[in-house]
Amino acid sequence: MGVLEKFSLKGKVAIVTGGAGLYGRCIVEGLVEAGAYIYIASRNVKNCEKLAEELRSKGYGVSGAELDQTDTESIIRLKDRIIAEQGKIDILVNNAVLRPMKGPDAPIEEFDLSMKVNATGVVNITRIIAEEMKKRKAGVIINISSIYGVLGIDPYLYEGTDMGLGAPDYFFHRAGIINLTRYYASLLGPYNIRVNCISPGGLFNNQHPEFLKRYNRKTCLGRMANTEDIKGVVVFLASDASSYITGENIMMDGGLSVK
Image 1 (cartoon, rainbow, N blue to C red):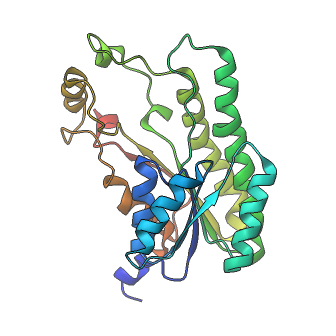
Image 2 (image 1 turned 135 degrees about the horizontal axis):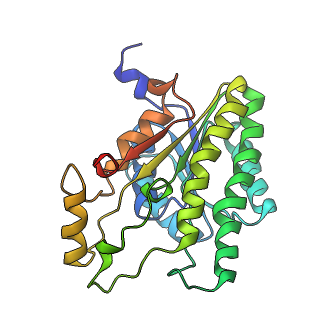
Image 3 (image 1 turned 90 degrees about the vertical axis):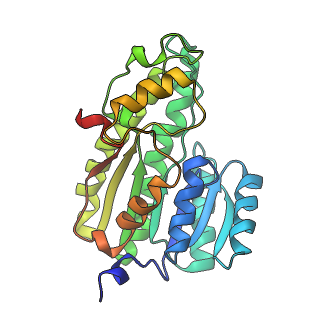
């Protein structure tokens, strides 16, 4: 097999949670462009199906799917549907994230809601889908974290802007998913299931000019991430090109964390 063939996902079946969002869309695009069949899953089925229709019009294999990560039965229904339609699940991308807290003083009930999706929900879908992968002794799980799973907040970035400080729930569950990656890599390795994590840097979304100037100075590449930056990393981790990599967290942050 030539090296470029190792990046092919032809014949693979993948779930991308939160697949209709900013990063989710590019994750889905990258995987289908590499040949995989994708189930775009979230509570907003309308958005998932809209993206699926767009990609199907280009000849890709894609379906929209309903998923409420706080509901075990919803996860099982999705799993059963895919097994009935495809006979297997090769790849799970845990990309969905709920951000109910808007700042450090937000109601504690919002922290609890956040954990139901971003902590309990991630563990639940991971182990349910992993059970199917274990039957075939093959699979790939990719968790999407953030640089804020590794770094603390820098209040200077936000001074004099209309942007609020980050909320504690996001830092808590993004850090947790990184070590959860290591846990499941160890647990599932004997079944030939690889588990890795990607920690993207800040995503450009027309933020306050002063924030952008300060943030860009902190990176080696002088810019924020764009939605296209994640495609290659996801395809690499999903494919045989990374067949001996598991338990890793890849910092996709333009070098911010090395300065």
